[in-house]
Image 1 (cartoon, rainbow, N blue to C red):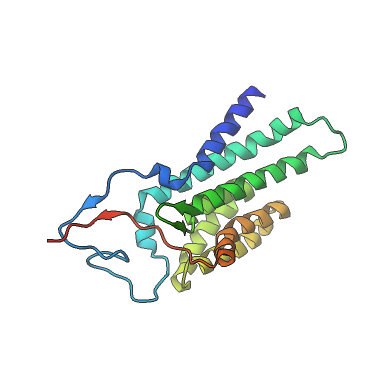
Image 2: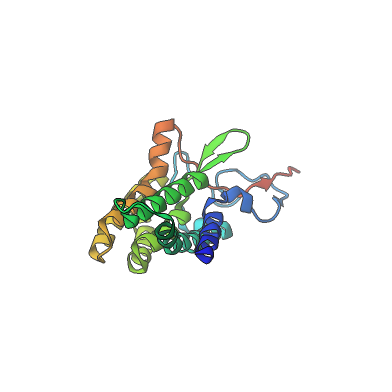
Length: 219
């Protein structure tokens, strides 16, 4: 059991470490003033909040989030049932149901931690790659892989991160059921994806997209 507790702690560390703590490198210096919305060459039109796949796939931090979400979630899924089974002493309580509930709380808390950043003020971000990484452990590799590919194809017609995550969550329910995943796991996957838009609506805030901080030097 000691080994499983250690694995669980490692999983929690991967999942509950805020993205901002893993920021790599210092802001880049430039000779031109770079617009905060897109850059010196290709900029966004007013009102364009869509997710640009070419930019998202080039961000190293997104793939770090994706990888730690996969590793951390598999660690939690594998260790929690064993730890709960060893610690539970009430025959009337189902250890399987309790383990799933604990996993759900851990994953939901992880999504909230990744989406909230407090610097000068509180800002909400859509942890897209992180949520997609969690789905691999929750509903399986087949549904996770197909869902990952499909949502980026559909993204061509999606207007903003809220619609992106809502569409992803809905699609993952269908894929999960198709591949025989536990219905409760399918619902949890949808909840993980819909959590950021729901929190944004409740707090009356827009989900901002991640931007690399750039030091501006005007000449």
